[in-house]
Amino acid sequence: MSGEMKAGKQDYIFKVILIGDGSVGKTSLVRRYMEGKFGADYLPTIGSQIYTKKVVGKGETKITLVVWDISGQPAFTAIRPEYYKGAAAILLVYDLTRSETFQHLDGWLSETKRYSPKPEVVLIGNKSDLEARRRIPHRAGEEYASKIRAPFLETSAKDGSNVAEAFATLADKLVMTIPSTGTRK
Ligand code: GDP
Ligand code: MG
Image (cartoon, rainbow, N blue to C red; front, side, top):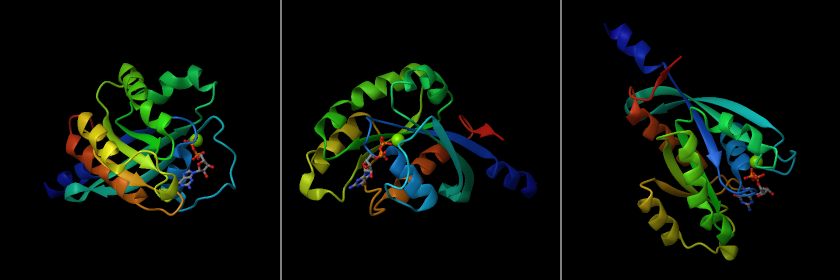
C-alpha cells in the first residue's frame, strides 16, 4: 500500500518552456538554474536545448522538470508549435531594464494560449542586478502578475538572485495540478 503511494509520488514529469522577447535572459536563467553558471561563454541559442532536473515540490512530491530552451530567432517560427506543445508550465520573462519587453507580454501570452490551453505561468522580471537601469517598477510587475493570476518574481541570472525560487514556485504550482495534468513517465 505505502509502496504504491511512494511510486505515485515520484512519477510525474512536466514540460516547462520559457517565453519572452529576445535577450531578456531566458537562456541565462536556464543555465543558471541547471548548471549554476552565468557568462558570455556560450553562443546565442541555436536550435533547441532540453534540460531535465528532478525537484521536490510541495508535500515532498518528487517531480521531473523537462525544460526546453529554444532560439527566438526567425527560424523559430517553423518549430514554434513543437515548442509549445504539451507545455505544462511557462516562465514568462521580461527584462526590467527594457519597457518593450514588458509591453510584449500580452502578445506572448495570447500566442501561448493558442498552443497549450492551460499552462501554469510564473511571471519573471529578469536582470534585477541592473537596478540603476530599471524601467519597470516592481509594482508594475506585481500588478500585471495579479491580472494574469500568476506568481511574480524578480530574478538575476547574473547574480543568481531568485532563480532557484522561480523554478521552485513553478514546481509547486505543477505539484498542485497533480493528478489532473501530471503525465506518468
Ligand atoms: P535570451 O535571448 O532571452 O535567451 O537571453 P540570453 O540569456 O541570451 O541573455 C541575453 C543577454 O542578457 C546576454 O548578454 C546575457 O549575458 C544578459 N543577461 C541575461 N540575464 C541577465 C541578468 O540577470 N543580468 C544581467 N546584467 N545580464 C543578463
Ligand atoms: Mg536564448
